[in-house]
Length: 140
Image: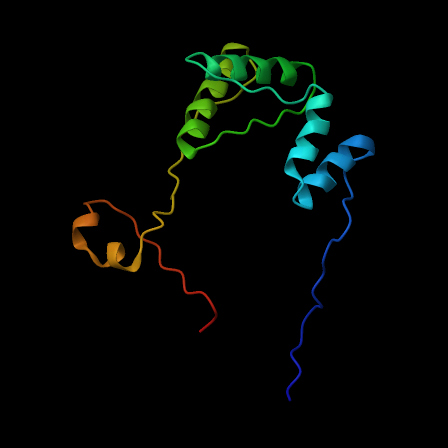
């Protein structure tokens, strides 16, 4: 049997970055005890559920406030659409607070369609200017 050359696989089995009760919360979540982990984080006052029409404004304002205080904040949304709307609002709030500097630029980003084989085969799903990227998994 031929031996393959290369580096041996590495794995991380212990949480390295977090400390104290924060580490305990992350360990619980990593092991599938999400409710227990969230309860620990909630005990720190780190979880805030936002609802209603002003949820993006409230979350963006808190994010900017935390950034000004040198804190790190993680915003989590249930859908990609919510995440996009919140991100847009955060950028607006950051710009208004003078936290963004330099020239504003726009970037094109490719997003996966997650189409089925049948959807990929249907020419009606494509439009002029549509970009496709073909990736082969599993080697040659």
